[in-house]
Image (cartoon, rainbow, N blue to C red; front, side, top):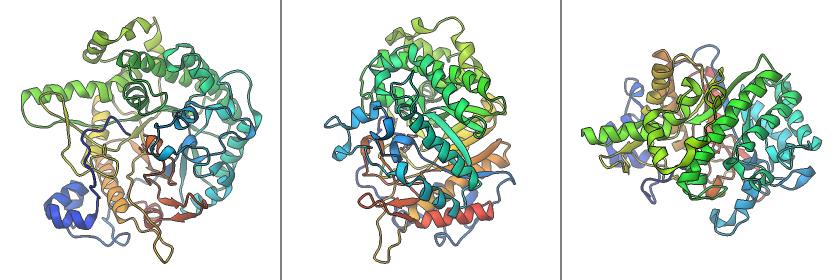
Length: 490
Ligand code: GCO
């Protein structure tokens, strides 16, 4: 997700053909991941028809992901309270084109046909998030039964169709009422999060077996509290790390609340991980890569899986933020409450030079922050297993925006998405072959949706959404993905 964009590589449109023509076959093989090279490499496969002959383990789960504010709409219906994203998107100048999530993909009203669509695509798993202010309009206290009922229907509808729900509790839409009390800068918010988790597990714990606490705390810290590009739109590094500690505390308290409500559940956080490469082979670049890795990965992995913040990163934070004063005795024990699964989200690698500056080494997608490097997924997955042990992994997001449009015959062709997904799946397959306990994959996203500060200008779905009439059109990638699911392979 949009960590502060490295370089704007404006106008780069990732076209397979362009790449083959301009970058040459060797680079294309690299773009597709090395395991692909051995299987026909640089020849351009016919989208959809070709396979790489790679089969996934028998119980591998195939799914797709969304989040509440990005698809639901119905922002003021049935008692939903406002979230910080309602406030933010309604503030002029915050979101491209003045777009908001007021209607989004109207999933709140179209959930039933959306579930039918998921069944047609033969998804085995659906990762979605609960809108906290739909369930608790004030963030705490009074439950909005109509909001809870919506998620009851959704979960029941999934189970009826044989699709496993994977539920995220916090995907950035903090109730505005809690923001007014200090948001993530207030320790109390972590406690309110645990109470919210209790409400959910009491309502759905008998039917939901996989719970994800927080989505990408790093993005909240960097994009929401440092760059001010996401809600709540703050620009203050000192306070951003206070928010971070409270987010991590919320995760730990959330795990405990969920566990107390349902002993059988599998629980974990959803972390966006990247691999940080030195941009050259100087010792300085290597040291900078190690340093940046602290901020990108270890700051979130270590407290959860090792019970401590990484010392080097914490030292640096201490120079600019009073964050350590907010760490109470016992907090790290709470944060490291054992989890059952680690949800990994991978979009891009990171390259840093000898000065610690980020540099671009690969073509980017329409999202200027997204360098495309499938091998980075292999490196992320194997690194987690190597450094943190055999914790089961679930990919809960991976995807790419492409300039999709409906053709005259009413179809949407997105070959670049197919190329992207296939090459990343090849990298995931290679990680599994090398011993990584990866259990499943969710493409981001099921539907075109509200892409935060980019509004509706980027299409990330495997299903096209016409935002004028809310028509859904499965793109070529959706059909390709259904075939992947059927074959359990690529
Ligand atoms: C994220 C979010 C998604 C984004 C996706 C594309 O991980 O950033 O979970 O909500 O839409 O990543 O940017």
